[in-house]
Length: 178
Image 1 (cartoon, helix red, strand yellow):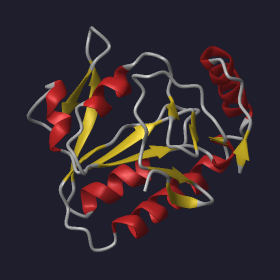
Image 2: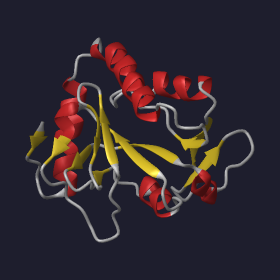
Image 3: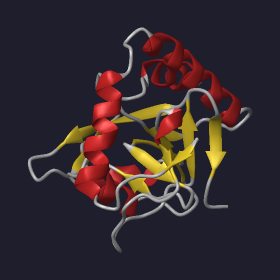
Image 4: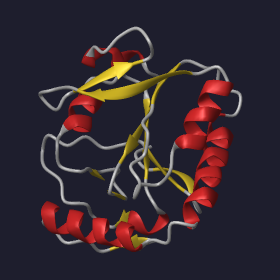
């Protein structure tokens, strides 16, 4: 479902956050399994490599089942570590270096909303914006949102980078920037 959002980033964030707080908690378990199933279908026979993933906050679409699936299927999962300067280091047991994300062939990133162009509305700290600038060419960037968080246009700035695809619990994976 594509929807209208305010053209101002703070107002758009407030609207999405309010919607997430109002979401019934009992939906999360089903969403967790649905997202993992869609990710499994996307990866199909793709040989495992490095993946940058994250643990969802309580109001975000759940990622636990996806992270477990990746680990069980041989992917080397790197999890973000927030550094004092709001940059992200990446932990796979060996490194917390921000540039380590460049070794990932898949980046699963949080978002509050994503638009048809692949523009991602984040939380506002710039941490994932920095990480996306470090990705390797050819790495797939997949933003995870709820189905009603797909927007016609997300407020963006020149430094913002588009994601390649969006993953939602009901609609699954939609490639955006092909």
